[in-house]
Image (cartoon, rainbow, N blue to C red; front, side, top):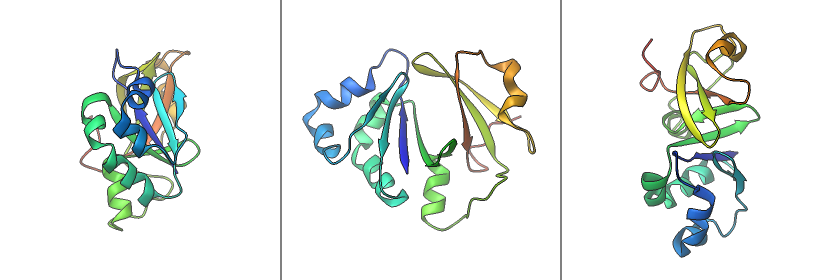
Length: 147
């Protein structure tokens, strides 16, 4: 399970977290990967990922645009969906109905695109640029962008 912390424009999240003794302490058992748009942290399970996010809550509120959970390569869960899965309120399955694309340009999130049921990320190529990072994010019904 990976945790992806997406930074807002103008923040170097990797440097910000490693400068703080408190966040360094929370990350001491992990080796965060620096990404152009934030950091990725590998954890053993969804429970440990949620616990780490809880430990970093103060930093997330101030320095993070979005928190995503990556249970398998290329599939991301929103924070709300990750919590529901952990609490056993829902069981995710392909195809997931509530999906959106996060369009990351350079070092920050620039757009959230609602995906219609039955479509693939490639169907939205006209709304992204070739150099963008595009993430398919599964979310809760409440988090699903209005269409």
